Length: 443
Picture 1 (tube, helix red, strand yellow):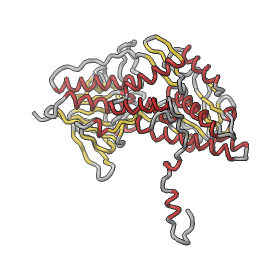
Picture 2 (tube, helix red, strand yellow; picture 1 turned 120 degrees about the vertical axis):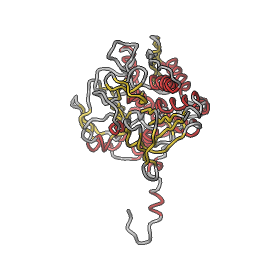
Picture 3 (tube, rainbow, N blue to C red; picture 1 turned 135 degrees about the vertical axis):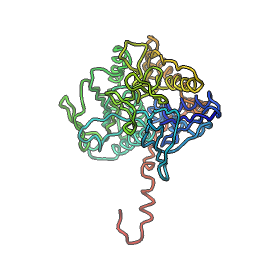
Picture 4 (cartoon, rainbow, N blue to C red; picture 1 turned 30 degrees about the vertical axis):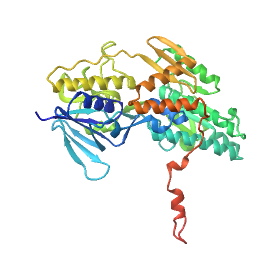
């Protein structure tokens, strides 16, 4: 029997976990697993706030694909088209011409991208928070703004440099805001020119609550804790413009801010537009609980999807509800999908995915957090400890678990690193200037 070829599009939470499980469950005689992703690593996104704040090394929040997927074939490139009628995907490698890869089963898991709105100035001024590059950039940018504020004699420049605006009150926005404020407050001990009161941290949320994944009282507790840290929380407020760094809000307020972080939701990857798979009104791939792609009532053989880009019915709720785009669902869906693919290859029936959302945990900075797990609510240090314990257990590979624990352990004895490495974002600038031919105009 010729081995079945399984093509995995995307190596995020779903792609990595599914490929890893398939490579363990199926022998090389049964299947060949090919993973295509333009990045050489999977980013464990729940650790992005801690990586940005310097609590863990950025390298330890990513998982190298080739190290973990040794029994899979990893292709560094981008899937530009999927024609499932022919069961062929077009892949554009990092270098070289595009080529077609035929498959028997395809896992469509390109994940999601930031869901932006046509707000004037957002494209030019905004900073996202979905990749490790964005997390490192935000950390360097915040520390750079402290340097600017410490040396400028202009009070307007200082005020703008020390105003940090975050748009979106979900987990990404709240954790990014809380962790970055915590880091900046720590850094101020090295800036005698600045006081904590000089900083202004603003959260803009269009709805009337934060952390919609937890009960309202836990969201209210989170707001109270942020207010105690003198943060400016704007609920029922929208960002209307940020042209040239001038933030204009729907409540009529306006102020300058050098830092505008956009965390207001996600949408399915635009890569799905280059496929022939059916989509729902939110542009997600339509699936049934077995994680097979469907067109109406017709199952599309050999096509599977899960995670942020898939509309997977939530069997623990009333009909019409779908699984939320969370890492918790993505990891569990990946395991069920891998088992179902293995079952189909071996001639057995797939099983429905059914998982009741266990709850949520969030960090609000060092030793501060909020958690709601199986109906049990915790705040402060216990919630922060649960947040760390849970995510340490979920990040793939023993190697990464050890490195993260070592980072956290060292933090108990050593002070947090608060140095900006801004040259990472333009490393050739100094060399280009130094290597200018004599007499050539400066660029």
